[in-house]
Length: 375
Image (cartoon, rainbow, N blue to C red):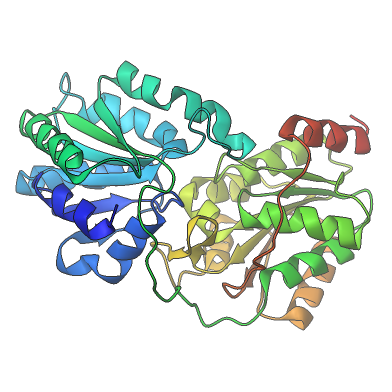
């Protein structure tokens, strides 16, 4: 299916506002919005999917027109509260269209963090009372037109409608990837971090390419990857996992290797960590100003320095690095600091085309991690 044909059908529903979080299943659609959609839609990428629902609600209250919220199905968890307590027809009755990338579709190979959500995606919308239909690469334009016609009627009735989009629904499109102007390569930065820590230290890495690079570089630098906990799902929660571990193991130095999109998604964690400081936590934010793991679309906060926010939140030591020497200095200071540390590393969008994924199951990696650290 051509994205242009899909967009033409979506416009029939009356939607002119697009709010959402990028997804690899929706990559072609997200690329269209980023490069060409500004002439047809008012488009914003907020901090998380729940915030997108809030934007859609406010937009509707101001204009009387329904908005569209797009997301990966993992983001459904973030929309449940504003959907059920604000938008639902038994509360305010605010219509909105959901476009949902279906990761973990039953019968389709996917990564472990998507399997359970993939099984329950349609059931969640049924439980939420949201009418929904699925489309895939075999969906005809006539069938799509029927779906958007039904979606439009549902929106006009003051309710929500979801279109669940399968993998490979959209034809490939050519286009330049977003570039941020930084030169430090993220995988090189991760390798340097791993070289500087001690064997007894703990690493908690965030979802996406960061955990994949930590996994591979751990095998190269350390000789194994048992030292790290890979948060392959739950975007935005790695820092609180690291905090919870550091709280209970004060004798361990805990390094959280986070991403800017993940930090942005649940930024309240920075405020909590800064207020309830620990002596053994190092929070590292690798900032490439993009949701790279799901297609490379820029975040909604390009140009923001998360280190400034960490300082305002009360972290004991806040450092930045743009190259190897600055990172070396920052890691030395972090290792010596008895307090809560934040390091922001500015990196390019470069990553290897042959970057692998963890070979073990998530459960086995958890087991190996806990045994390594003698839990």
